[in-house]
Length: 252
Image (cartoon, rainbow, N blue to C red; front, side, top):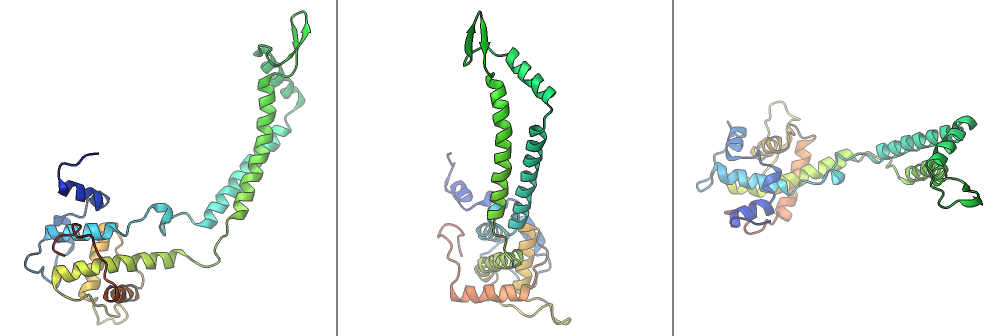
């Protein structure tokens, strides 16, 4: 793989391709009516790059995300497959003698005699390899059913709910990554309030920015318990701000 210039290389390294729809026009549209103006020296193109690259850091492979298949579902799927293999084994094991005789005759008709016993006079006796393979395959189905059943039993299904806590941790990470972007773009400290507990209250500017950017990037138009999530993100930001690579987001 080759790159035309450093910008193209950085675009690849910092995963712009994962969120290509987070463009300057899209960010500007998403922030229509937003209460804060961009600081001098910052524009929509800069903000789009900053949001796109900061949020790309939080993207995980599906096998490591809250959206992955649950252990309970995996266990159930393996149990179902074990039942399928076991049922197939039983049906084949109970194959009628006449049907099995026809299978033997068919295999014998295609046999060239190799591996058999020469009885003389051009007669070879023995069991055709294809028929041996047929019997071995049936035995393997029985093994397969047991193997998948044992593998299913070995999966430890958590007693507690796990999707909610993992989604919360992911949203906190997103908030922590967006906090320095918000500061640089609007010149304000990211803060939160207890919205929406009070009907007279509206979300803080940072909460609104976070939700609009996450909606644009991932389609998540609401964040469960957003106040608690972003309060934790702001505490983390104050204690240990995210450190981006020097050439990841210029002017940060």
